[in-house]
Image (cartoon, rainbow, N blue to C red; front, side, top):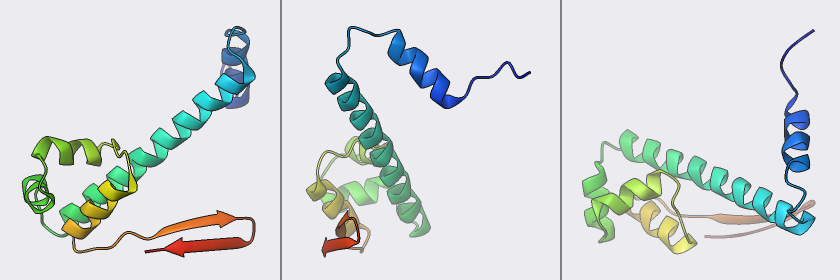
Length: 110
């Protein structure tokens, strides 16, 4: 028998050990974790594109009019709004496209 637990069992134990947290707060925490993970992935992809183009963080920072440190933060997933993503995309010579999907329907904007 395996000494490892399933992910579902781990999550259930964590939830059981925090009975003082309401279901609403629990869902809010889960959504925040999902959002942070998505931002991390986007930042990683932005870094990959920058590197493929042979650009340094300093060059992107200069193009965007921000600090080198802020570019590093963006690439680590510290992205707070679409305008930041749009400006970063433009610095790479790209464009930002946003798509909202709901069931079989989708709406996009560039």
